[in-house]
Image 1 (cartoon, helix red, strand yellow):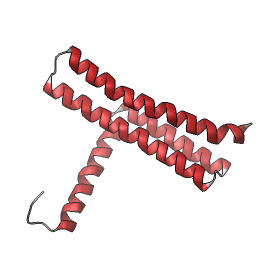
Image 2: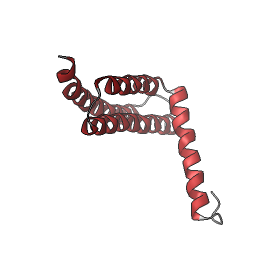
Image 3: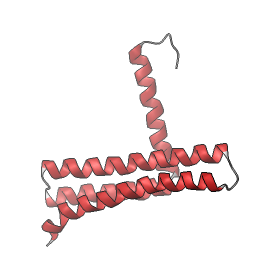
Image 4: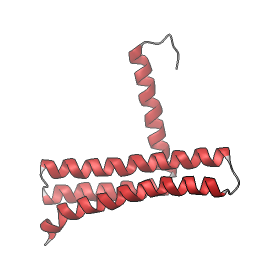
Length: 122
């Protein structure tokens, strides 16, 4: 970014960079692709069951958190691979911790989904 550009122009450039990063994730990362497909399915399910505004809020927040943390996990893995391309015990631990953060978000997202949809299905 150019320091001489206005605040507004710099924000627009930041949005372009962020969009490019999100597109890269969706295009190249299998885990994000699976999560995106699940998100689309849950949105369709929410429309079908006409879930409440509060349920929509919880569902969309959970989806956003999982996909965001997965993006951070991917970034951490990329940095770790760049810094230390060979297999290394400490790098492996760092990657496991990042993956664990995704796992925790997914477990709680599943709980939210069950709370929303079990009463509607049964």
